[in-house]
Image 1: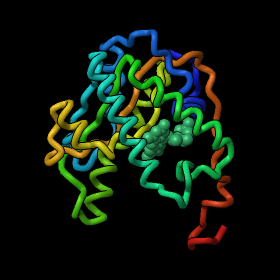
Image 2 (image 1 turned 30 degrees about the horizontal axis):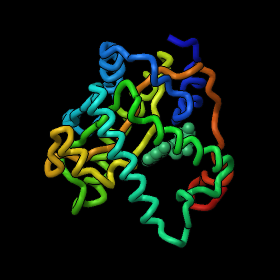
Image 3 (image 1 turned 45 degrees about the horizontal axis):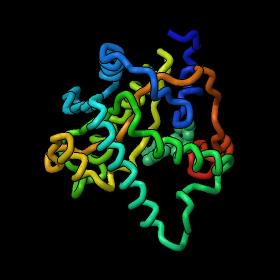
Length: 217
Ligand SMILES: Cc1cc2nc3c(=O)[nH]c(=O)nc-3n(C[C@H](O)[C@H](O)[C@H](O)COP(=O)(O)O)c2cc1C
């Protein structure tokens, strides 16, 4: 385990894309251990309706990575001429760094030792805001706990949703019914190259926090 204070763990768990070690295998037991920790996250009525698919067969990893790339191409095409080739949110500090980083993961995702595909039961289409929030809130916290557990052990991941443009195809590849399950994202699992990660840019609290009434800083 890395020697990190709780605050260091929380502020330095990054989306790791350039510094994933694609050469070093990751033991199944370690992934299992991180998942068991993740399962302690809160979930509505403690129903545990989630399912978690870990992909570690190299050929399946490569095919899933290809779907991720195809999905990102769909996404970029959907941005159209208005935003050109930029990703949404490209006007943030170090945006070029993010774009390069995204590309690096695209290039190497197929070499990842393992990928995680968390699933939530049911579909959100047509659900009320209450149910949508309850559904996503019942799994996203567990995924983030998984990230933290990885980081504490010298591993890393990157939050990705690109493949969801190809959700059906991913379902077909991995035997997941898209009628009965919603895919949350696709998360690479690998040791990191070095373990020194830093806090990232975020808008200051003064710009985003209100006290009592919206807009009162
Ligand atoms: C909902 C969501 C979807 C994301 N989708 C992708 C993605 O498809 N590909 C990718 O490379 N990064 C993706 N990211 C990672 C963000 O680009 C990253 O979180 C952001 O640049 C901030 O960096 P940090 O996570 O290291 O703080 C996603 C992040 C979130 C939260």
